[in-house]
Image (tube, rainbow, N blue to C red):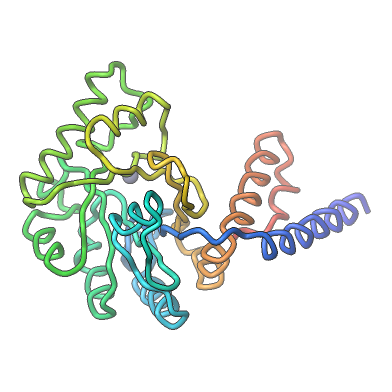
Length: 276
Ligand SMILES: [Zn+2]
């Protein structure tokens, strides 16, 4: 009986939140965040090729237009006009499947994207992109940003010199190889502090992205831009994709509630929350 009351309470809260989210979701520009796109690895960071293609088809069908990171920054900072229903597609880490699987899907549909590279891993490990692959993609609507030299969690580094090294030298390495400015950074694991944000700015980046779930809006802190993570392994159905794209605020709220309940020992109640 107690369980039933809990279930009804959770259900009522969920319905109220859904109504709230649908009515109050601010406009904002979604920045999707992917990692691996393949059919071999079934880890939390992987979206299957068919699911990724279905998601891209959905965006096209719904009239979304992929934009570049500079276009996003111009719009957020200066109010520059964007095409209808803009969306920025991002990939973190620079996995080789971004070239073998995601790139053909994007190219076929004339879509843009940005890949954040771990510059020391490029061409060094088999699971990561090579410079020739990156250069080919650069000629076909894919741009590149930094994800540091070695995927260092910046908040865990011992000195400012180490943080500076990660921010500065990854940018320089990618610029040297590609002959174009690197204006954007994605924080490894999304961990930041105010002083790290200042260092990112002082190193000449225009903006930086976290993994916090939400859309970007005019007036946002350019060094703490939210994204909509599209990972979670096989749980990423098209339904989940649509929900996260349309109501990221609700998805973030539910995720927060779940995490807090689970952390405080209320695992069974946390499990009652729908995952979107
Ligand atoms: Zn990463």
